Length: 131
Image 1 (cartoon, rainbow, N blue to C red):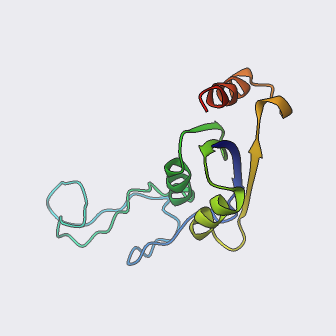
Image 2: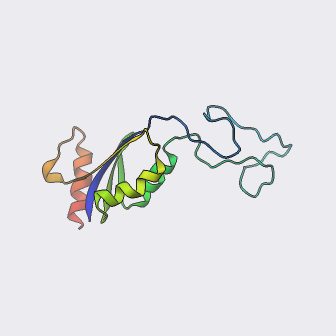
Image 3: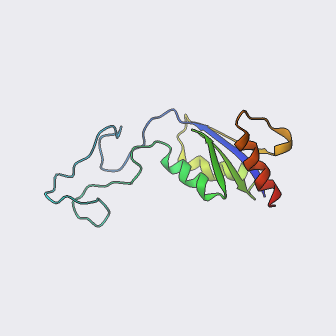
């Protein structure tokens, strides 16, 4: 197990949903049915809500969080404890981003890193001590 830094930049601010048509998710959808309800695959109104809330990085973050114990220490940067290599992590994350987006994965350790936020180094040290 090792601690990996994952950081990204998404150039596109949305992702597409089949049948949605709005393409930017900057507004509320209304299914135009007379029943006030939560939307799901089974509600029958024909409105498809994936649950992302319009977040462009929804899928990416979901995969990051599935890799192992994690800490989000900046808006687009995560520390993840994983037995995977950097290349294996990159391979798992790549399908969730666009061709113009940026993604960086690196192994880190508490002996060779610096941060102005002491909790970041504390988290890495805690993970290392439990290995």
